[in-house]
Image (cartoon, rainbow, N blue to C red; front, side, top):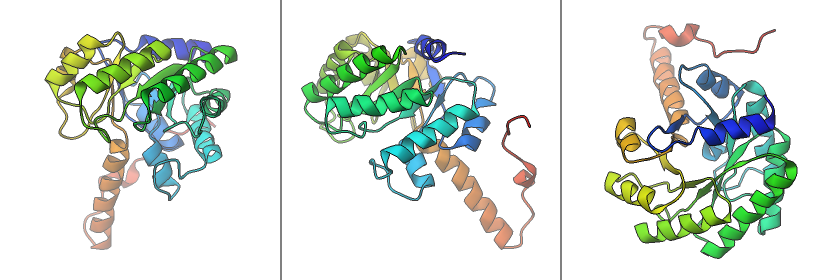
Length: 260
């Protein structure tokens, strides 16, 4: 499948009421494991998890080249569309962020998260517009998941999330991501106010998928949660093995590997 086909497929999977579920990954093995699960339709990276796998904190502490390289390995490991968490875009200007996206496109990514970090709304809208323009010049209908941090680092105002979401949509975003917002009434209001698919970050206490779908959500992702699941299981198994307990049955499990 070409990059254009993968990007077109990814965009079409964003359906309000029938959300695209993304179990975020951090390396080739996790990507292959998730891709092999029944019902998986696309792959998303998690910047927190990739940074942690490299031994550094999140927040663009991992250099841009290393992040793009990690995305490249994940793209090469699966036959599904891959959307990359590029944090704030590794750039101080719209053109610098657009260059980051161009590098992600060059390694096969067909979508990306771009967070506003509560910078002035017009600044992030300009970044989204620059990314849309650069992706168009690269010939890929790149799926921009524009994130506002209003519910993480702002004042948790629904009207502000709507205002920012509308601006980013008008600038060329395909989907609006509001991590921290999981209240169903507020989500219904957000969906109703935006002419755009809405992405929810789900955790252990988030509403069930069926209720998120009924609220009109088009995309559900899990961020660093899947890495937490994997390493919590590893920690429990290590504790049992070090204590001389029964050998875990999962010792026989192996992640999918490419054909020789």
